[in-house]
Length: 189
Image 1 (spheres, one colour):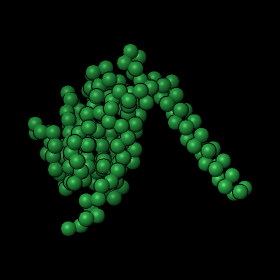
Image 2 (cartoon, one colour; image 1 turned 90 degrees about the vertical axis):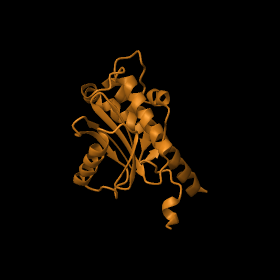
Image 3 (cartoon, rainbow, N blue to C red; image 1 turned 30 degrees about the vertical axis):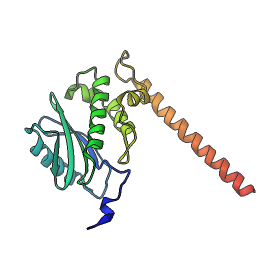
């Protein structure tokens, strides 16, 4: 038995994608570059997943050796993919957080047209939930707070997206400045 594959890892999510009711990709993020390195392979995998799940009434599937949790809403299918050994509850928590966060910014109207109209918010939400395959957040209220969205506001505006990016940039700049100071003082000692 290969014990290396059973080692716990922070990199729990291999991919996340949203398809329409025809199986067309609306959004996809693959976090394991070795899994499906080309877009053609990714789309083939998505097609296989869609064909296995779009008429099923389950919430979990095993496709091509991967654990896939999914949810559908009106004309959208949401998928979170992990390895075969991955904890399904962790993947479901990511899926639920994604769906509930999107439901809030789309004002409970989780459908293709609204999703496409608010893609910048969708990408911000995905990036707040998962970073490089590592689950950062599973509480939709925390995610919405981080992307600076309030239920009484209109959907994310360019200003709130710009503000979010500016805050992230400022944080990164502060970390870099702090690192420079530490290096400078360690050299001077």
